[in-house]
Image (cartoon, rainbow, N blue to C red):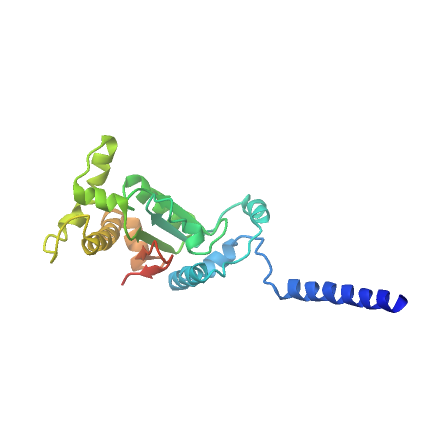
Length: 237
């Protein structure tokens, strides 16, 4: 009987030891936000790599463990994000998750069709010139409903006026070789890509501040496409 109890205690001890070793092997939870010094030391290319690496973790299911409660408290005194992302309104594109980022990591502007306007340009200027972000990323996504609606000429309330911002991307593909309709996935994809590229052109044209910051190497302005089926982000040249 005593021998059985001894073996039982040995077994319990081994289980506790294994649990302790497993806990030590796990990556520690991130519980703080980026500091001003850390932000200042980053380059635009490094920030782009950080977002790309984060997306790889998102796709593979190995995202970073974060203590959001601790990060909320840590960020209360100020923010020093790495980037500003202009994304579509689509609820299936959770921007922070897509890039495996936490609280205080990125600014996010959202509008159906991820186009720029005066308010968003001002927000981008604040994010970079004032708050120190090093990257402006325009993130479109495949199978975009706003793009499809623009192709179809949809009209409904304020949506009608909103879609005029995406119309230039449809017109840019006037010579598309194939059916020019929302039923053609290839055409939708071409318009979606053009919409991202034209938005980047407009950002540079309509914001002398951002254009000069990019020319001086302080920031980078890039485009990307999100794949709704895989979660992967393709950075556009």
